[in-house]
Length: 126
Image 1 (spheres, one colour):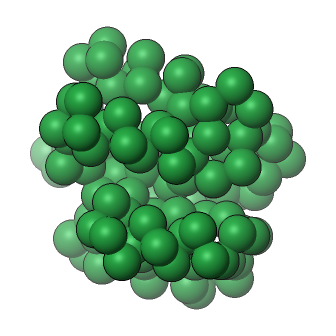
Image 2: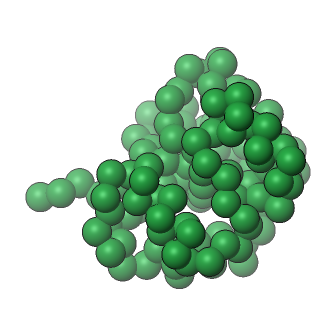
């Protein structure tokens, strides 16, 4: 039996979380959600295996940039991160420094999101 890949969606807007759930429905994926960086770090610290993170940058309490800094430097986690944000400049900088693998526009077309996931989760079936 093939183990489902687990994606952590770090997004403060419930409707956008739902958008990702709809897009990814039918793929061999389990989705876990967090509304900010603090909740996302708690998921990771719980020991739950996370194969990939879809990350918004602009969130209350702890935004995506601070979350990435804590993820990479305090926890030394090498989980692939796809930034899904409207802040193109910050997203590009975080990718350039190697903190994230790829950036795609927030509310991106289904094809772009699936291609990014396919590249980072090793040929997901859908």
